[in-house]
Image (cartoon, rainbow, N blue to C red):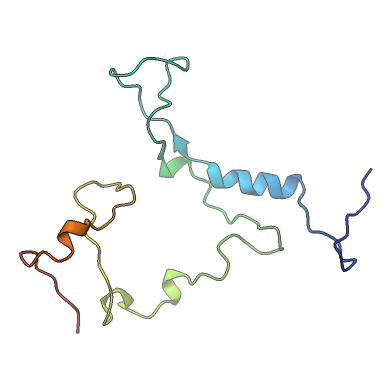
Length: 125
């Protein structure tokens, strides 16, 4: 009936409108299904529902997305232009080799290689 809901302190409970729904929906633009592959059955109208979707950058909505508190999603994170110069070269910076895959999926350090003396490691001074 449109009555405002209140919490235990009598304060209005934050909710969202179609405006926020539309803003959040723009987050999920640019996802593209991969092409069907021959080693699986067509179970969904010939579409590949087995493999991860990829992001097509030209299809992405690049504009800011509003959050539910009057700000923008990602507010509070520093912009790259605001970081100190050459921050990635600072002492103690850690680098992780992700392999030759241009789109790695959550690579983890192999436990059997962590203490392998044949692997060369370096630390920036």
